[in-house]
Length: 93
Image (cartoon, rainbow, N blue to C red; front, side, top):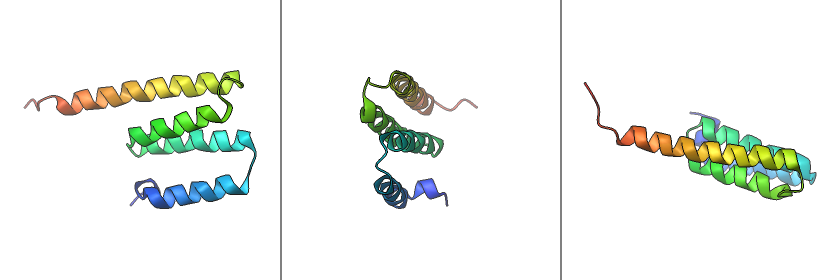
């Protein structure tokens, strides 16, 4: 069983790390990393949520972070649509 499959435990770990460090930059990076972890575990909805949370830490004030998050959110959305399309295709034997 993967650590990422146990979402409540994963969130508790993140909340602990976030509460230990009030640095906005570290919080934003941690949220972005959470998005990556959720994507790797196949949870696209959670990945999009974390990427959005990361974006809103700075909004458009940090241009590089804003662009990275916006691009990643767009990519995740497209990937989610692609997965849905593949899953709805009939099996060809």
